[in-house]
Image (cartoon, rainbow, N blue to C red; front, top):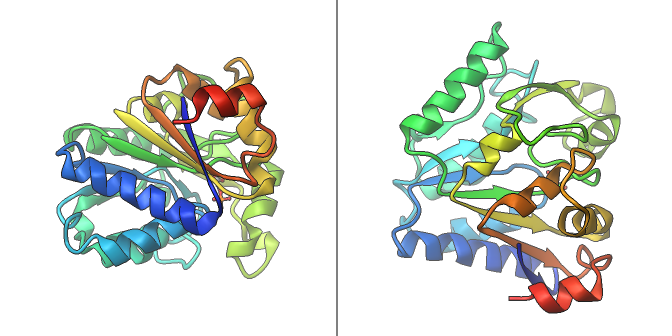
Length: 248
Ligand code: PGA
């Protein structure tokens, strides 16, 4: 894993957007895997400002979706991806794949999502955030390396962390459909973004503990092309060794 430490969330957004635009300029980006939530928001704002049509024919694949929310609910990730990424970049709805968590048969919806991503050629660059408990996507602690897209129960901490996106904490769904660890690991390259002191312990376990289901992000150590971009607050618990040997 390579690490780049930046000053703050605004710098994170600039670096995140630059990496994505660079991949596009290099001809290495047809399918962009998109994370939702607070962390990548600055990256998407920068992209919207700077892309100038250059990403309009990229396809998007979301990481996850809440079970039990209508797709047009303001808190759904379908809405997030449409409002914050697809519309500002000029990407048409038929080029956006989000796990269809309103389906009766979630297993079939998971299989269909994986098929859609395969048909599109697989994810070239996957953007990830990291949960305070070390999750990636909604792969909560306990998620194994061979997990695929599936329905999961959200950790209580995750529901509390995400309550800020809903009118009341009770509204946060209890289940989600998420890409699995092995689904995520199939991306050709990964950009993990981390911002703020709340993520410091999770980032340290992801980068410095032996890979294990206790800290699902630690599985990423087994991926050959991961760039971690963290602001100073999120990098605060990393060892001196990580900071000196991994800094790009
Ligand atoms: P956040 O979530 O960016 O909203 O903090 C990250 C995550 O849960 O993966």
